[in-house]
Amino acid sequence: MAIGTHLLQALGDIVGPSHVHTDAASLDATSHDTWPMTTKWQALGRHPHRAEAVVAVDQPDQIGRILALASAEAVPVTVRALASSVTGQPIPLRGGIVLDVTGLAPEYALDETDLMVTVSANYRGSELEDKLNQAGFTLGHSPQSLLRSTVGGWLSTLATGQFSSLYGGIEDLVVGYTVYLATGEKIDLVAKPRAAMGPDLRQIFIGAEGTLGVITSVTLKIFPLPEAELLGSYVLPSVQAGLGLMRAQAAAGFRPFLLRLYDEVEAKHAMGDPDFDGCGLFLGTRGVKAMAETEFGLLEQMVLDCGGRPLGPDAAAAWMGRRFDFSSVENRVATVGGIAETIEVAHYWTGIEALYHDLTAALAPLADEVNAHWSHVYPQGTSMYLILFGQLADDEAACRRLDEIWATTMEICLAHGAELSHHHGGGLIRSPYARRSLGSAHLVLAKVKQALDPAGILNPGKLGL
Image 1 (cartoon, rainbow, N blue to C red):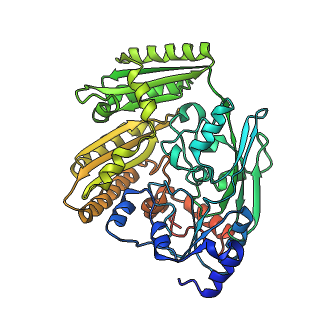
Image 2: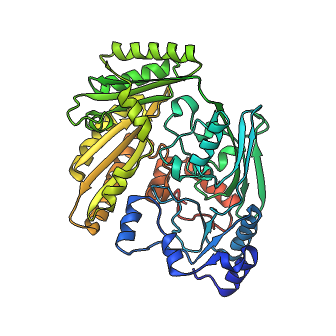
Image 3: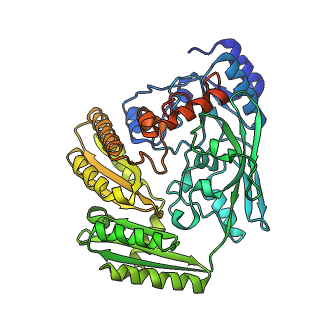
């Protein structure tokens, strides 16, 4: 839809005329994120999903006023912060307004007694972690995108970190937050520290990808920095042995902060050895020294019992030092005709190995290299992370191949009854599969959407809405 002059003027009255941008450069820049497909579109000079105005806010109350105005005018609003999404969440599929929240006034309040920190939703993850470390604490939440993502983005995409086996996902770390509804109302959601006064309403907006409201302030749990940390690297005889080990330790109640299993292909990269033979495993425990040492010893014995062989801490320590590095994917995507994609899915223990074999077999003809690892573990199952690399003649062919890779992966996951996303969220690429993935539960999401966003303005076209 076209945004009229009267609406642009009204937006300018709220944020100031200099904060409302309609120039081509601003609109083009906000029509892409970090998803390889949008990077290819950008290289080809394409901007298929483009807003009509970028509105930069610097105060939370401006958000409520803008949303109320947009609802009254039935104008779509898509929230954007650092745009580190790799699946197209902040892409303005229906045009309208891109709401730039990067300029919100920073908020930071540390509570060392109740072990919480309250920050503005646009706080960069790495800056928050550094600040907490200086005070003797850690978030425990450490996604690969820590240096380029925000707290609000974590909630909106139902993110999890590399150490989730110990600390949990973002849903486990949230104490409370403030959200603005599409109609402009400000809502505060909190549990102190737990509440049984009706359903846990905090869960409604976590993972909603900005389709139900705009989160502006978040209170998270924090943890004292660990007294001790132990690391180990191992070679395992097979994927089956590794998955069995991961399942057994989860069932026994262990909580290592680091537990990563690599198949034979990715193990060569993870171990930094192109001649590495076998599957690789990284293991780490942390906490009170005696407890960390005891847990590490028991877990290492389990590794040995399943045919593993210890290689020392060096490979795991090297991974810890480079774990935020995304350059191998970005560099390949930046190459003309180069393809690289990361797709994370999840399944029960009963289905994960068959899913792995079917996916890698089906994807092998579509890429030069298909890597797989497992890095988030639960008593009921685990995530699986696929990294694909390839080279085609040009970027047009690369776009077609990326589409084929995603369609193949999603259809196989649906056939296996697996989860289509573990922590990257749905975004633009998974939205066409959302109804089939959620099944009858999608009706609940649709009804919540209708109740909270009756004009349908918030990030339309995502999550199958």
